[in-house]
Structures are given as C-alpha cells and as structure tokens.
Image (cartoon, rainbow over all chains, first blue to last red; front, side, top):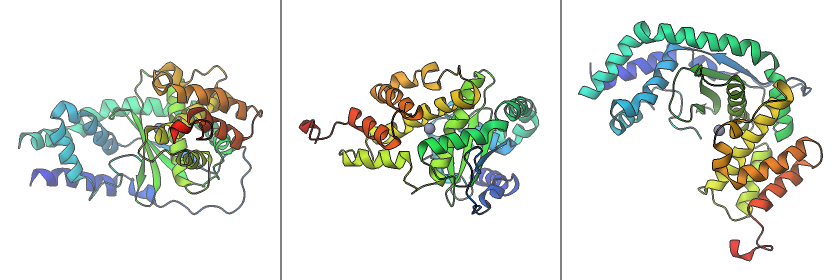
Length: 88
Length: 221
Ligand SMILES: [Zn+2]
C-alpha cells in the first residue's frame, strides 16, 4: 500500500463511517416564525476519535516535519475529507 | 518515505494508545458543557441573531470537541454545500467562561455562513467598508466584522450566562492586538445592545470612526 493510500483510506473511513457525512443532510427550515426566546438553530456537541486524530495530526505537522507534511495533507485531503482545508 | 511512515505509525496506534485517555478528557468536557452551556445555548443564539440582524437559518451546527488542533484552537469549516461545522479545542486548562465564549464565537461564524445574503450586521459592515475604499484583501475588511463577533459573543455571555464574564478579548491579548477596532467597537456596540443606538447607526459610527469618509478626510481616498 502506498503511503498516500493509507491516509486516504483513513480519511475516507472518517468521512463515511464516523458520522461526519450524516451532518451534511440537514432538515429543511421550518416555515413557522420563531419567537426569539430560544433559537430554532442549535449546536450539536460531538466527540469523535477520527476527527480528534485528524486535528491532532494537523497540530503536530510542524513537530513532525513542517511544510512537507502540510503539503502531503493538502494533496491527500481534498478528495476525501469533507472539510475545506482552510476556514473562510 | 520516513514521513509517511511516521504518519502511518500514528494512525495505527491512535485508537489503542492515545484515544482512550483523550476520550476520558473529552467526555469530561462534554459533560460539563452539556450541563453549563447547552441548556441555555438556544437562548444565547437567539440573542446573538437578534442583535446581529441574522434571520434564524434553522440549522443544527455540529461542533466537534477535540483535544488538540492547530492555532487558533477553534475554527468553523464549511462542508460541501455550505453546511457549517465547528471544531473546538477544549483543553482542560482553559477557563470555563472563555471556552463558552469560544463556542458562541464559533456559533456566530456558523450562523453568519448559514444566513449568507441576509444583510446581517456583518454584511452591512462589509458593504460599508467597501464603500470606504477597502478591498477584500485588506486586514480591516476581515478584522472589523470579526472583532465584532468577539464583542457580541462576550456581551451574550454576560447577558445569558454570567454577568461577571471577562471577555476573551480582555483575558487574552486579542483586543490589545486588534487595537483601534476593538476600542471603537467596545465603545459603540454596547450602546446599541443597551438600546441607546439603532443597529444601523452603531454600524455607521463604527465604520466612520475607523475609516472616516472622504468628505471628512480626503487623504483616505
Ligand atoms: Zn473567528
């Protein structure tokens, strides 16, 4: 297995198996107006080992070997990982 | 390739060696937040949206708590289709109030994303900044709306959770680093929140103070 495929496989598992994909399908807006006492929108706090791993690796990129890893991740991620690499 | 091997090693050992203790740490923070933050968070979101002129987009925003991430430690990403997803580092050393404010700050990003095009306070600020000659790549074009997100999140903390809350921007060097923007917004925005100013007037005053119009200062053209 090539080195790239290890990571891609992991991230694919993450995207498909860890529930991240589930969050993409969000119920359509409810039509009735809401009283601003409590928002209709809400947050869903979650923990997930693969998401923790992903950001752990990102945080360690500099420790491991800096730019090469960042480039490695940048090449490996977009095809499989549902997050944009950079926040807007 | 040594680098890839290092990554592979980490991946294979993560679940068995690193995750168990991280899971304990994250679950403790999750339990804390479920008790201290979640019950009133929709009230907090409502206050923020009302203040910022955001039409409630009726979305549920996944917010992943992680043990470590790259700086600044919390970010809101976009899934394909513009669904916001937030990731927040929840180090146990961080003061509880600052963590709650961080969750609200990331919520603001998420709600801003989800309500895009709704002419909210950030959109209005961005439009006024463009009118004053800023371009999208200018630091101020990002920092003026972004600092207001911190000011509003801190005000929401005080309104909903803790009247004594110390703003993240004051507890860290954030407001100091943002300089005039934080000073101006902290001087003007609370007057809107207290009902002394209309929102549009407050936004106008903020932009005017930071980027005087060409009538007042022709050198800024
Ligand atoms: Zn932010």
